[in-house]
Image (cartoon, rainbow, N blue to C red; front, side, top):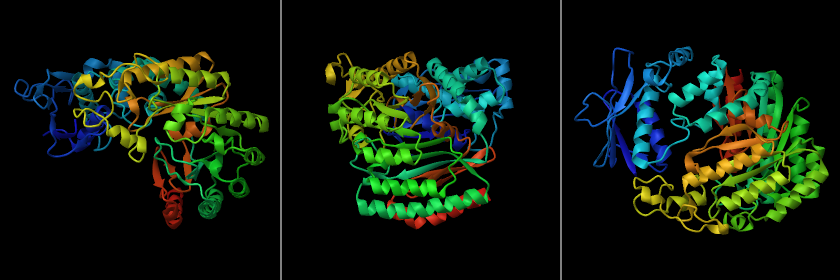
Length: 548
């Protein structure tokens, strides 16, 4: 499916746009245009039981007032979603308490929008033969809905019922949301206010470019890095002034990138001195630095980080298979990760996180098992499990969009109208057999099974999920999950994903989220280093305006 158009005489554009997000979950590369090669015709169906009680889908000739859909010459039997039939009376009453109704303002969530999305979800599942574990939840933060239902006073079973019967979320994903919600409850209760600030510091330089990465990552040249730190230092100083002016306190600092430890030792020390010398960090509960590329860590850099009071390190192998590391453009080996970890543990007693990515090209179940068992045996304090995300700015994303047999127009495996697009089986790299692949990529169902095996290994070893988020272009339409041993959760990760307090982003490509009551405003720095320097004062003034 390459292009799609929606046709409706009764549904507002905001509802059709939301339905488009459901289609895109099945066909990530789809475009919505007025003359699309596929037409989805939608009309609302009204009844006296509710103001607008249901939305349905069927053959337009037999159901002229009902919602219907046609794909090419394919006609589908009537599909219906009746809110009153899918929920209990108590659950419907809870929706009214949450403010969900049929006639909310454009752009806001309404029961009409949810019902329309459920019909489109059923249509896409019928046509493709695939089931979306997150139902119609297509956003980055599915945990927010669980939190909102909790705050509204709903019992756990009522929350689960609404997620399953209204939003179409699979039981396994509801279990995950419930576990994450329980892990975050005490943290959010303690830190959800407008007085605290989490600070993100962007260091957009890398020793080399990973093929899956679309984050800002400029070559690590000393002159450019030194000049950048000068501008960044100015912004740090301006934030220090604002914290005092508006009575704000820092509770977490996260230095990310890029690869912050790509800075040579003297420049890294200069950055840390700017942060600790200018910002009031005495009350910060967490100070984290990414050292995502193990080959960039040295004894001198670790000593500088420890002296500055860094409490958390992220050393990210992504996989413990050297062949995969070479294929994705990382300039280190699994042995470099082991050496960096040992050196870090000899230097200080900080919490150490390690990232792994599922779905990397050429990897199968054996690779994932090797990596997760290796991390567990090393007793890493926390492990963040990512599914490969194919971003437009990443070389790997472009590569996968080009695969296909002409029928799926280059979208990801499993997304084609013809189920045979999934048919490539056979031996996988690394000795895995019977792993379904499309042009070397894992089939979505296999990837989901690998993720479940990784989850079982972690939970069985004492790790618990404590935060999750999703991304557009994620292979398998799944989720990234952070697991931690007791007491090793990252405060920054929790409050950032929950949007429960101010988050200030410093540096090129960084985003700020300024809370304004129950909502927030986003501010974005330019990704380009030179443009960041020119536009930084403008973003600072906007941030001040919101705080005022």
